[in-house]
Image (tube, one colour):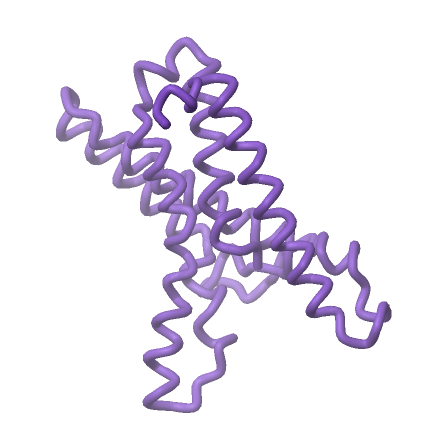
Length: 181
């Protein structure tokens, strides 16, 4: 799985780009909403602390908890349903946009996990079918040294660093962050 920084930065950067480069973006999304999208990118991995608690009381394997229900499309769909409900109930407030950012952040997490490292079960518990490109496995085959874990971790850490530098450069270019330092 990509590291936490990647899960935060991808939805944050994408929502920030939408906000900065579309006519509707500035009216629809605030910086707080973009940040909320980034934070929501971490939500699917809340199953890891759940596993840590459960592992103290049973010998449940992590595969029974991680990348199951929180990595299915039901979490982003819940956010979408909440978006429509809040928009109907509170049309004058912008609370519904936070629900949309939640849906976007959680969806981006699922896509990142499936594309970058490993597979996901998008229709769990209805189906155990897995989908994923696992680009890291393609880039770092296990035959390199017999244990590819250090190489995989280095590649994922490099992705975090690259995204952070790109985001900071974008913020400097677009929003002149040096004015805030």
